[in-house]
Every structure is written in structure tokens, then in C-alpha cells.
Image (cartoon, rainbow, N blue to C red):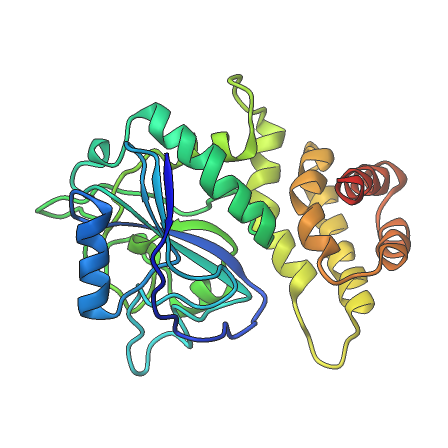
Length: 293
């Protein structure tokens, strides 16, 4: 495995609206060198280019600035490249029409375990996807096109936190990375066991972006502690509505997000006040593990 630094040009600062995303592209070429040549020609730099088969990584930008790999049309989304607190963009060597060219199952697991997972945990991005990933074909239905059936609206894009692909970005037509096995990537990124997730765990993971939005909604004239308390009250409503949720799994995934910029005592107080005892304890246990690490 080789890790090299190939500095590129960023699009500047993020707009800080609270969402946290990781987005996957495919290079449509055979190697990192050809991809870098295209970035230089088009000024379309991602944060990282990854050759899964060779286990090579080229680092182009810090993860806390905006990349340049997405279009942003006049009158379209408020922002694409600059949307949110964090939007990490990865170019994966290979083609969208042939996801196997990007990597074998073992290659996808390596990418999830050694690249995507650590980056997302570091930047507080939920390791979930709540969008459909469809194949890139020459004829419809295809992931290519502005109306491909899976592309998010500007409002949906703005609110989304988690992992998604170029095929989901508004103002864009590209359909990469096609029908990549995103579940395998995310399972490896989370460190899941080989056993299937329970229904409760699946429901918990699906709710994480919604819960993240509750916790990070800025609101007007509200302190971080007030926003956290209101978010936790919203979480309690979700948990009470879906009583079989795995609260500990939700807490484990959310711990880095809850901790971002909040004093621990304020977090603990808000959790205890907002949630029933068993749910509060699950959150506090997860937070304690996160703090210890």
C-alpha cells in the first residue's frame, strides 16, 4: 500500500449548515495518475483518490475544506461542494458501468475498514446510507441523468447526513459509482460482525441521519445546550414511536456527533432530563466510552 500527497485546489470553506456527508465517485479511468491529470485539467479535485485493488491512496485536500468534484448550477442547490460542516469526496479508481472494476469484495471491505471508516469517525459522519444505489446503464433505468429516480432534491441534499454517491447529488447528471456494494463497505467501516443486523439495529441505523439533524439543527438564538436538549426530546419521541429500536447502537453511532463542541456535563444533564432512564443510560455509556478513547 502506498499513500502519497498530491495537493490540489479546494473550493474554500464549507457553509457550516450542520450536515455531514461522505460522497463516492468513480474515476472512469485505470489508475490514480490518469485521474490526477483530469483533476488538473478541469480543476475538479476530490479530497482523496483511492485505488482499492492496489491499496493506494492519493491525498489532495484536508478533510475540513470543500472539494471541487461536483457541479453547482445557477439557481440550483444552495451548495454542492460546500454543503454542510463536512463533505468528504472520494474518487475510486474504476468505472461506474462495471463496479467490479473498482474492487473485489475484499477490496471494498479494505476501503471501508481502513479509509472510509476512520475518516468518517474522525469527522463525525454517520456510517449509514439511506439512499438507493442503482446501476449505471446505457439505457434507462440508469444512475445517469438529472432525473434518475435517486437524485436528491436541493432540500433533501441539504438535510442529508451519511454516505452517498455522485448519482445522488443535485445539480449533477453523473451516475457514478453505479451499483457498488455500499452495504459491504459500510459494514466493514462500522466493524460489524459477519452476522446480519437485527431489525432493531437496521431501524436504528436508518434513523441516525434524522437524529443527527435533530442534534445539529442550529435554530435561531438557541445555545448549544438548548439545541441538544431539544434534539434529545425529538429522539425520545422517535424511540417511543419505534419501541424496538436498539438505543445502544444509536448512542454508539451518535457519540462523536453529540460530543462535538459540547461540555460533557451539559451533555449528561440534557440526556438525563430528556430521555427515560434506560435510554439515557445507553447514551451515557456510549459517551463514556467515546470520552475514554
